[in-house]
Length: 248
Image 1 (cartoon, one colour):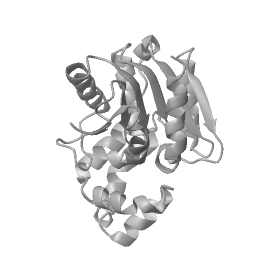
Image 2 (cartoon, one colour):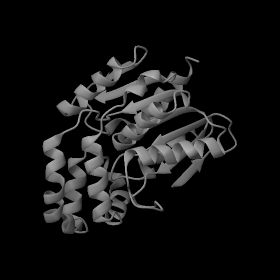
Image 3 (cartoon, one colour):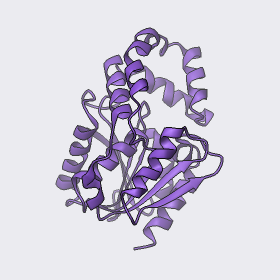
Image 4 (cartoon, rainbow, N blue to C red):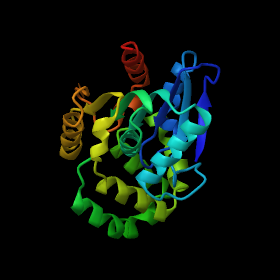
């Protein structure tokens, strides 16, 4: 796994795990805002543009990042954040190691499997994958994700670099993911952020995560769609991190 780093001179470390189909630039603006206060590390999840190996499973990605934290960061960090697929990897990390971080910021992560969506991934990508490198098609797809326009070139470049088998693998893993019972043992203070205009599965998942941890705080974001918080509102996301760590 590869990593981008900002603010390496600071002792308090924050890891931010990007969403599926994106890459480290998901959190680039957040990292630039916070690099004067924290050591920010942006892992590139397996199978994504800039990664060094194919995507296998959410569990394997979680284990890779835990090994990195053990080897490079003395076994724990201040905060870990994650969006969507990155949020699922974060939840899996918390399930595997109860004292991995002091705080966790989970954004728009699904923990309720969608069997129908999972079944349709292979046939749908068999028909549409070839269109990904078509700039006009990619722009329409980009617009449907509600990402701010100035990130299109990053999105287009990196989407074109994702192999078909990797895209299918991480989409199938994401739509089949369930939260482990061991998540209840995490010592982290967990904050779950969800947009008001997310789909039903994401909204239900946010509540399900918080039911499994009595100290979990659910943050309902009015007017926001999937992924908009960290990608489109970097200032607010950075401020949320500052407010979360002030509670220590």
